[in-house]
Length: 143
Image: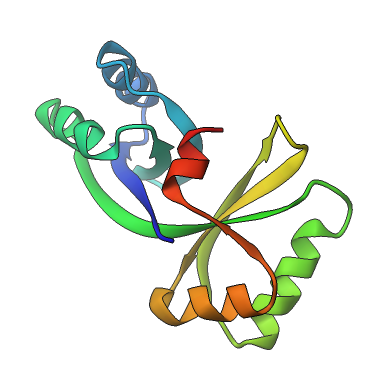
């Protein structure tokens, strides 16, 4: 159950994040989760959106560099130790995390952890066997 995530490379200067958000807004594309990491000159904006393929088209049309990558969404209870429990399972299985970000799901008081793993195919089965709930793209987009 892989989820499409879009990554946009934006210049680290005033207004560029707004430019991307406006392009998505103007095209009625809803952002479900995001993370922004910066370097000295550029930032990487990672987003889960309700229409990823359409988002890529409109972002490219507006002269941004964008690509789609696959990530995994893991649901955990939103309580103390929720993240530590998942990371213990991932660590014990020797799974490398390239990056992650999280958000709280309002309907059921759970947290959703978005992971990018280096060996995505093997990871899904390992996490399921350990009892973790892996969300489908449809489930994430319906939150």
